[in-house]
Image (cartoon, rainbow, N blue to C red; front, top):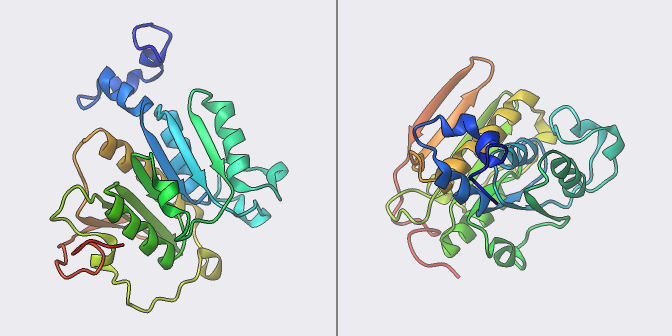
Length: 254
């Protein structure tokens, strides 16, 4: 990918280049980066859209679900003609039409303990766009074990949360430091409780932003839990402390 022509990436990303934190090396870094997005729903769709629009070179996208009519209000890459299709396949087509320079690897499968290391392998950063506690814990453990940054998003009802886990920073909390793996949570998706579509969309966009910032080492925001309440239109941030007795990041895991 060239960066010296007026009609190439420099012009396309000129508004980013006006920011002090961006330069042409930033564009090059993004173009050479690979992100794994786990989940192609209300979080994964806007996250993938903004990462591709920012010029990320490669996306590996994993989800085994099919598009349903009830998905359409918040899963913004899909339309009525996609109903019944695998989400990552339909999402790949939509993104390639918009951003053909981004290589998209669509894998219609469920992430589990058997395949997760293979899926993480070769990726520079992971986005957890799932909707259940057990998946987040598995992704968090693998992130720690493989030393790959993880951007976790979640939304239900009128609220959302965002957390960046960067295992390269040894004194910062992981997801299990905050939500212990042994805790008993009701592990239902947003379909069981309802979700306001702009809430989940906001968190997905923020995940893309944190992914770009982490890849470019711009103002690291790990070690925090960001909470967003749409009804009050308020953000709040909780500073997190590493639990040195954490079963996940306090010692090596298998």
